[in-house]
Length: 513
Ligand code: XMP
Image (cartoon, rainbow, N blue to C red):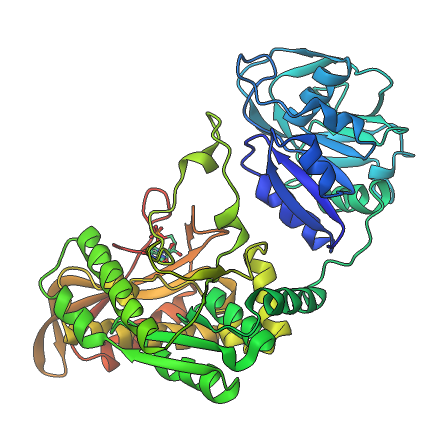
């Protein structure tokens, strides 16, 4: 078990960011519900505890409170925003009710530079504050380390007990040197080393998979996306030919997708690959379906059916592997005002029916996406797979508006291939969250050579995003847009017009359906 820091989640929108920042310091971190019993936390032997921020007020009737026995564990505690109020609440300070919690920039002045949290840092920092309830009396045996324009108690500390409270968010990018503050906490205050690396994780995970799987067989649905690809490479390293990957061609894949998967996993990694070409079935079922929700449902249902049949053909197996990631596992805290608790992803292609009688193997369950990518490289997967942009489970179906026909799918597939090629050539592909083509069910008049045309429209969509929840449209260079438009209209038969989507999310979604 690696050394770890436990983060108690009080419903902050940044809890996962805190966890990622800690792991960037090569220290493992685990997010737990705020009310996890201290005995359970103690059993995990963490080197320190972080109390996340949160939208609540310690005064509220049902304020989320931790098990007070965590203050008897003798390990360092870092309270962020609401976490400071908790320190005060439990350790004899005083908090005054403020307005609604909101954020704002501020300048932090460090008064006590001997505080290990600020070692090696300048004495003034730009910070992202949380303005809500205010500390008006220090908890017992605490001293002031730093102030801001609005707060005399911006950073407080009890050095002997190794407790620190911050009124600002060190985890958000707007706080300059925030990463160093977190680094100082985990290394200098908690005394953690740097043993959390993907190189170490490979050994640990391989051992674990072997001990769980034994001599049994494992099946894995390989989509060609980052998560299932990395899971496949990892499990294959652990149990070799006991793993069979099932790859379903639903007829909605990108250009050369099926070939690339067979090349990389079949020929290069020599992973047992069962290729299921179900494109005719999918397209038959989708004929005449125009409603986006119905499309998704038809695709989801058909996938399960095809996959189930494929697992039967694959022969007796005890385990089913899935590329589930940590953010899918973390239980969101149901506190009013916590956006993470409200936003539920509307799509989950991984959800296979419970009645499938497999035991699950989920070797990426404790990893964040960026860690999965590093792990993929560690395992020797090509960068094209490890850094590829997300691609929705229902594939090109949600990028081909209206009814789907083989001809239309071919148009959007060809246009998409051009977008990917040009984005890669421009160096932008790996910098963006997504960039792709959408086929609009709109025909318009054009002229090509001497001929009048009446053809379809391709829309180019390029967005920047951290997690797909919100996104900004990207101002692609004009010469790149010109090249894209020229190539798409000249090379893709049936397209005579190219437009650009300049909508961010919200109010738009990233995909068009
Ligand atoms: P939206 O369109 O909701 O997309 O803004 C957010 C992110 O999710 C991806 N997406 C999907 N992924 N199955 C998936 O596996 C789906 O049905 C699906 N719909 C959207 C989308 O590509 C974007 O990255």
